[in-house]
Amino acid sequence: MALLAIGSYAFLSYSFTDNYFEISKNLDIYSTALKELDLYYVDSINPGELVKTSIDAMLASLDPYTDYYPESEIEDYRFMTTGEYGGIGAIVQRDSNGIEIAQPYANSPAMKAGLEAGDRIISIDGISTAGKNTDDVGKLLKGQAKTTVKLMILKPDESTPVEKIITREVITVSNVPYYGMVSDDIGYIKLTEFTKDAGANVKNAFMDLKKNHNLKGIILDLRNNPGGLLIEAINIVNIFEPKGQLVVNTKGRSRDWNHPDLTTNEPVDTNIRILVVVNGGSASASEIVTGTIQDLDRGVILGTRTFGKGLVQQTHPLTYNSQLKFTIAKYYTPSGRCIQALDYTHRSADGTVNKVPDSLKSAFRTKHGRVVYDGGGIAPDIDMEGPKYNAVSLNLESQFFIFNYATMFRLKHGTIAPPDSFSLKDDEYTSFVDFVKAHNFTYSTKSDQLLKELKQTTESEKYDGDLKDSYDKIEKELAESKKSDLLKYKPEIKRLLEEEIESRYRYDKGRIQVTLKYDDEIKRGVEILHNTARYDSVLTTIAPSKHPFYDAAMKTWPPAPKSK
Image (cartoon, rainbow, N blue to C red; front, side):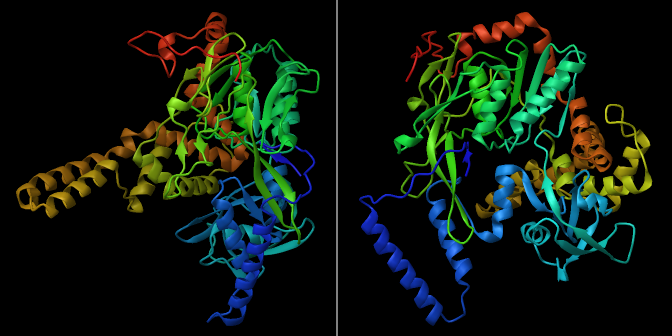
C-alpha cells in the first residue's frame, strides 16, 4: 500500500457505520440488475467490462484521483507507484499510418533488439495493430518479466516486415533522467515523477554534483511533474532541511489520517542556495516540496502557478488482485495552507466543479514573515512563463513532421555532435523545409478560425454579400503570410528539431541537454543564484503591490495569521 501524495500507513479495517444498511441494500440491487442483464439483455454482455464501467462512473463522481485497477491493468498501477513495469521498454504512438515506436528506453529490451524510433509495429503475438490505440498496444506489450512477445516490425527504410522476439524485463523508468552543471558553479537536477527512490536519486545526484564541482547553488526542475509518493517528497526536503522538520500535515475524515510528517534523516546541506522551477503541470508531491521550501524560506520558487492538488490518496487491495486508489485526506504545508484549487465536495447542480474563490482564500506567513495564500496551487516568488510556440511549430509536431524528419536524419547520420554543441545546419533546415512542402503541410491558425466564425455569423445575418470581397482579401493575405512561417519561426522550429534528433542518439538525457541550451527559465535561475543580494531579498520581503490580494486604493493587503 502507498499514499499518493501518497505515504505508507496501515489501512483501517471496515467498521459498520450508519451507511451499512444502505450499502447492503444497493449492492443487492446492483447484483440483481447485473444478473437480469446477463440473462435477458438482447445481446450477450461482458460482465467484467460492465462492472469496470460502472465502478469508473461511480468513482468519477467523487474526484479524478480516485481510481479502480482491475487485475488486467495491474502493470499500470505498479508503474504509477514504483516507476517499474514488465515490458519491452518503449513508448509507442499512433499516426495516420498506424502504431510506431516513439522512443525506446536506453538499455531496454526494445533497444537491445534493435528497435528504434520510427519503427512501425505491424502485429504483436499475431494480433494486428491496425485500428488499435496506444492503450490497446501498451497492454499487449506489457506482461510479466521473462515472458516473450513476438513483434512484426517494419523499418522506415525497408519494405518487408521483420520478426522480433523480445523477452520482457522489469523496466525501471528513471525519475531523474538528467542532472549536470548549467554553469561553473550551479547544478541542475530534473525530476520527472515522485516514484520509488526519487528521494535517493535526487540525493545521489546532488552529492555527485557537490563532490565533483565547486557547487554554489542547485536548480531543482519540477516542471510538468505530476507528483507521486508522499514519502519521496519528504525525503527530498530532507536533503536540505534538518531531521525533525515538519514537511506536511494530513487531515481527513478519520482521525487516523490526521498527523504530521517530519523529516527523519540527517540532511546533506542546509546552506546551499536552492531554486525550484515549476509550472501549471507541477502537482501533488511537487507542490509539497515547492510549498515546504517556500514556507521555510529555504529557496526561491520561479515559474508559473502550480496545478493545485492538495489531496492525498491511499491504495488498498481488493479481491481478485484488483486495487482501489481513493482520496483519504487533504495535505497542509508547514505554514498551514492547503493548496487544493478545485472543491470536489461542493459541486454545482450540473455536476461541475468550481475553483476556490478568491474571497475564501486565506493568508499565511512563511518562516521569515512573507505572505502566502492557500486555495490555488503554489504562486512562485518570481513569475516567469516558459516558451510559447506558434501554431506552425505546434502543428509540425502534432502532424509528425518533426518526428518523421528526425527519423530520416537518423538514417543518414550515424553520429552527431554532443548535445551542448549540436546545432542543425542551415542546409539541413532547408532540407526540412523542402520535406514539409513536399508533403503538402497545411494548418489552421487562430486567425483562420476566427475569420471562419465571422463569415458564418455574417452569412446567418445576411451580411455576407457585402463583405465577400473583404473576406477573400483577408483569406488570401493570411495564406500568403503563412507561407513564410517556416522561415519566420525558424529558431523555435529548429529547437524542436534538435531536441527530437538528439533524442534518437542519447534518448531523454540528450533531449533535456538540448532543451537546457535554450531554456530562459533556467538561465534566469542561474542569474538569481549568482546574485546573492537578489536571492536573499526574495526570501525576506516582497513588494506589497506584488501580492494577489493587494488593495491598490488602500495600499494595503490582508494581514496573515500565524496559523490556521
